[in-house]
Image (cartoon, rainbow, N blue to C red; front, side):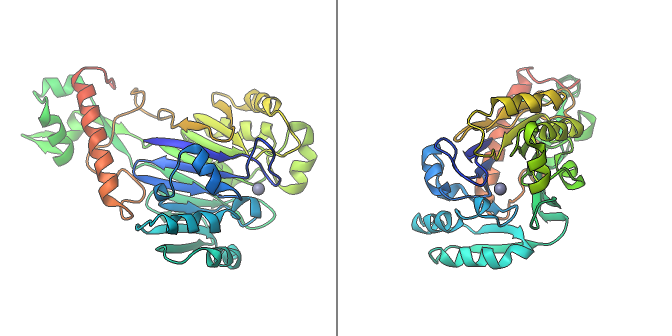
Length: 343
Ligand SMILES: [Zn+2]
């Protein structure tokens, strides 16, 4: 299961229809909560998301609309008896605010603080890049490890069928047939979260080639002066970011409360988004991960054999492995039925 659950889409001021920020990325057995603003706990209830689904929390910066929901969410996790460790990532310069917010939460959660102060990998598959905002801000990028797409024709020619396919995936070699002889490389699925920034190289690096790009779109093109002044993106700039990056789907969010209808912003983004699909997020939207951008001809792709499939197998290995195996089996069946392509 990979999807983005949108918990809130308002920037500084919430509205009747838009809660402050909040996004849960469900990624196999992981649940990555991004930028929980005020009211996130209640939005989770509306969205049908449980506190126990959260395994990792990622803050872009410590402006209130991106982190004031933290004490409530953490307290709720304690109340619900969450036993697994939870990793909390944030810019090091916001440490004082983060520690204050965490100190307000009920004790009892195995919460692990991970400040970062520069670009790079902060967990397996999870990277940060600095953005350009009024205080230190980092965006996030999540990339699945590269896998391989099986080629049914070559499998058949090699006489490999049924359970042997899974065994070959697992072991990499079966009776002299190597996995690479019957498959081609397949880049991993990817996601980027670009929040509260003016145009900058960090945003471009995060967005590069991702399947799903969540980007702030605080202002209309007509208010480009405000965007420049407060270091935010216009809808058109968000579209241009997606286009330049070759992103698959652009999710616009973090709207200023001055826009009752964000349809005009979506149109402005579409004008510049190139091949990227554009979604103007509404609270409680569920957005599935689109197919891989750089796949080798297999819509939806095929699960990678063996190898890690999630950024955080160390957090809850049982759950992650369980999901992976189910999907592997499912996809093997698909290939045997001849529905998969890749040749
Ligand atoms: Zn904000």
